[in-house]
Length: 440
Image (tube, rainbow, N blue to C red; front, side, top):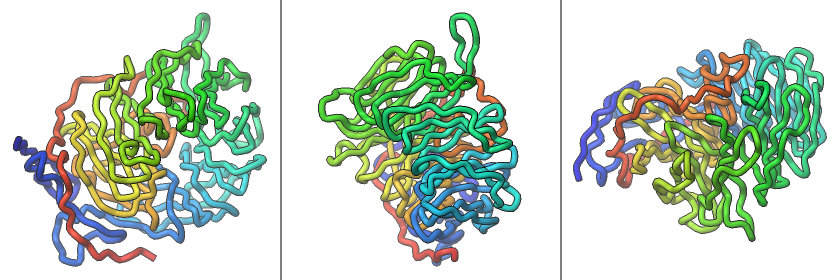
């Protein structure tokens, strides 16, 4: 089957000629043009760090904010990849930054949550926890919510950096909290949803810091939940005795809506929801477990699965641009894109850190790699529109940062159907080799 689509990118026009032809794009770590000078190099720029970037990037007002395992938080110009500032901590930074009202909130393995001024990279305040902070903070109505490996979820005042409340779970909290407004039987309350290594997903009253309900998945919950239309979607790690690892939970009552084994016994990434579909990555010890998966949002039934030849897979992000829908996922081999039907092709081959989830802004994919931060032409116009990015769970952009309180009653997935415009991404990639220079 030959299907042709011309998709307008930011810098060039790519021709997708057939499902079995795939996409010919570049390889490397740093350049805005290839050494051959060919105009189809997908790399806008790269920014080198001393160690890998597992943090997911946040892009606000033309700046990319990201943490790195070299103990630094970086602010990088989104247009040309030049450093604006760096902030040094005393531990690796795998937490993804939340940026609100001129402040970056991020955790570090040095047991600290930091508030950093976006203008000059100076610390506004520091909040100490009892262990490493790998959880990515979320911010709502003057409060920062974040988990720690000391088994605790914290609420911190954004102005003073003082604790508003803290609630203990049974194990480490690496999951990123999500806060939503949920209509109860007699009121509307803000609720924090977060997972714990103890196997539970917790709903916590955001004002009181009290547990509303806990849902036991039976396996560690290390990833962020996402909440859409009154339902919490979350994945858990592989269990030895449990046959399900992907759940939909009633956001008000904490009861199961559906559950499924999404990865044949492997681990799941953070789930993201868009237009009636749940997208996730899966990882495990066997190749069939390394996949990009689409589930029906109502039933949990699998719509499609595409096996990825990689041992590390990130949480996906969705772009619904003028030319159609594309789902982007990062792996240790590079960036892949799928259309709505599960036809997958390679956008760029490079050493992407599998824990760094891509964020797309104005047709550019920003993602962490084993060498630093990458900006890659997405091949289509548009920005991330899925629930994970809209709710700020693992990296985000201006659509979330501009909201003082996230409106839990709105569904970012609603809207008209979209054209499956990336059918030409279905085949294998014939990649051009690039020799690319590092940015020092």
